Image (tube, one colour):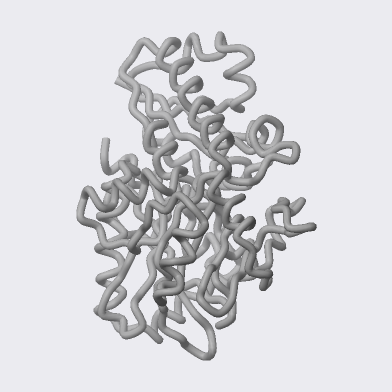
Length: 350
């Protein structure tokens, strides 16, 4: 019996527009029926799914760029807020309901909606790591600004991340000596930047009202992990995990005074040869922990960000990504094409 791959994405997403189309012949040649729609097509006209194809259906989600830009990250609402997270989860719940109503055959997901929502939520995803004994940074359930300052004054530097953010946006560092944030500040109020890029870290005045504003929006608070330094750069790793296997590992670096290494905020994706600067055992540990994290999240296709302790003796998961992105100039598709690898591994797991 033939199987069907149902893909949902938007033309603004390079991975969907280019790399999905480029590699889909791998599944077609294996007898798959391919159906691809935008999210808006499915939500506005669910009838397009009434005949999704023959046999069991495997669903592949790409990031819903159009819906995010027009329905979720809009207006003056603080980025990464509880409200944004709720809309994101409700969106995927609705999409799943439409798909299950339309498809009479067995439906499986490369990444199911519940796992996508889980990994977007930094608090719940951290809890999933802890529950599955996956190493991660210590977190704190702090409710007031004074409680946070009391902990910092004892010598604990804290990273505050908006609970439902990504791309390195909405991150702050509170230490005994200095405070930094990549939110825009105006007259003591937190504001968003207008683009995904350019959220640069800046030192800010020590005001309890700033922390209070963050706590009102819901933030995930972690102890800062001191990382190894190579050539005056701090680093972490991104590990692509597909169906429980680490298929690509690369290094991300940033200037030593930067807090985050995300490419969108000025970090750099290093060529694969940069891995030669790291102990081989440390890379093996990182890949093992990344696989455990993907399993804890319930993701079959994931980018897991991990970080080392200063001496490389320990590795910690920073966060997971259900939409880990496209090839980069440093790691071109001739070296690693995520869609080609995913489709080949789908066939292996049939």
